[in-house]
Length: 164
Image 1 (cartoon, one colour):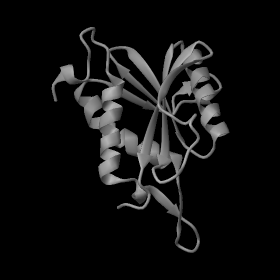
Image 2: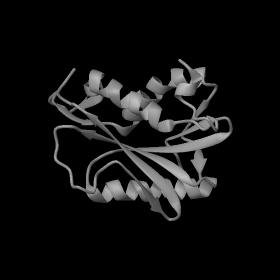
Image 3: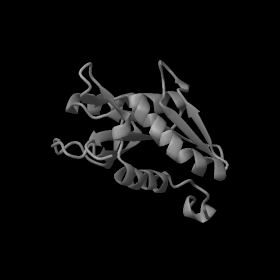
Image 4: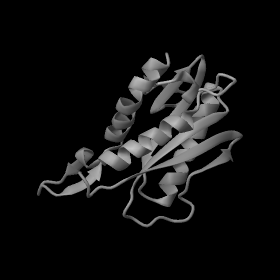
């Protein structure tokens, strides 16, 4: 893997490239293997921890080859971040959520902004996992927005929970 693929001319890591590759992987593979079953054996939900594990497992080879580091559950003020990536001393805080409702979606962005502020970072990455076969409000979209003076970029990871 050419290093230029993941770093711009200024040496900054292109996180969007890594997330785009993961999104393609999820499209091909699905995440059904991570679905929990109820007492009757029916699929019911997916654990957020399983999804962050899927993401971390996928990106770990790339991060390692590029001499980056991954920190899980790192302390950030009054809580723990899901993940911090570090490349050449520059950190990216990543917060993950499973989409359940608009309020929870918005609260997750505020939580991430708080973590970034506590860590002295100006940007954060918000990964939201959502089943592809459900309808969502227009407010649930990929975008970059400013929350409490922190730039938050939302990426939607759609998965087909019917596909193996």
